[in-house]
Length: 571
Image 1 (tube, rainbow, N blue to C red):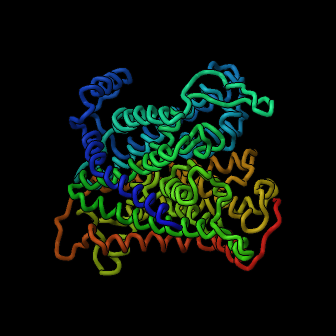
Image 2 (cartoon, rainbow, N blue to C red):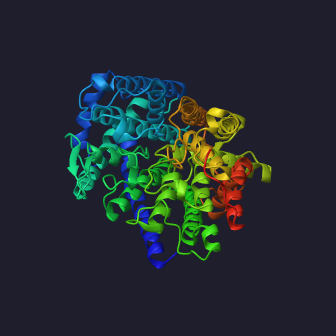
Image 3 (cartoon, rainbow, N blue to C red):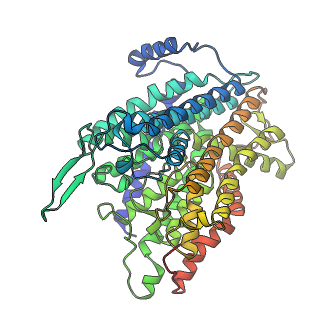
């Protein structure tokens, strides 16, 4: 740990915070249908899209109609992507002549990108054609991110509105998220990435002869456009197998820094959108404050663990930090920061291999995902995930003082609490249930590359990443098998839609309620006391749920390493 590392972390936090208000104001105007900076150019295109698709932008939907439209749209996206992957060999823009993707891998990949997870059981440059990367994956990166933003906005309206049955239109919200937010930023970001040396071409792979006279094929392609949206939309799917550790996906220190900023910027700004739409910006800052406390705690632990290195090597006097699996271009500080950002934001892009982190360094990414996409989280998903915990925290506060729980003038009653708990509990069911299965059946035990607690952590990390819709991996698990492709895909589907649907049900219930005026007994939800309560509820629920599994993996691995014990490699 050094001053340079802390400066990088402080600068990163300062830049993200500086962007929260301006982007929050812009997105508020976009989702309220108000005139904004890009309206003169994009409003005619928006109206044209509605005319072509037969959408009446003035017609709003109930929560059930909103949810139905969201599900049908994602089903159609899954079918389209699956068809592209299965027919890849006969489709154009395939200069490397990639074969059709196997059925189980195509099922896993289609599910992965539709759910904004971007888990990859394949190597991008050795498996997919340019058409599959662009029309299939990049397209889904946009619309899956926009779908998450739309659900978040619908929930905000549930808190902001009173005595109404409608939450807006899914089609309108998704269109505006894509057209006004994701596309313009990605165009600029793509041009910046190209300026840093990132490829953006439809030309064939490049054949080269090395100085030793060996033949080498260098994979290229339309990389920059996919990287821009994979970061901004917190998707994480890499064009190349090495993801953001590949020099073509992350050429410079500046590209690394701005990719980290892009991962957080929309999720952080949506808290400001929440505050503005409910009429009190302080509410948004309180939620961002709770997210920030959890994020900074994770950065502190991860940076400390990686800077201090392996306890086994330290016992032999080999100090200096853990550089295994990290890019020397970025070093320990930027790698640790990236790892915490990508798992806090449900992104999944990596610039270092988490499998090579120390036990405690790998513990924090696991915890970030297990808490349920609430530390900034995926675009949209982070906000509605944290608001689910807000409902639970308000319920707990009401029990403490013997009052009916209220939040922003809305009574929090049995229906909202039940839906919130359904959204919270479906995640550990997938994460822990499938981990338990994989550790007892031969098909599951064949996957991990390591024995002992680290091998267990590789399995736990995979199912945690899938259900949390993160998509990152420890890197030591052979997951391209029928067993893992199928079970991971199920985890992704449940982790995405079994949270989204209860969230929309909560939004519909809240929108129908009247707003109550604040009284002397109303619990203020914009101050430090509420932030502390919210953080405490998140940690208590996460700790009670996941500590036993973490104790079997990274915790015991750390303790064993400190005692000088190692485990033989092999599943």
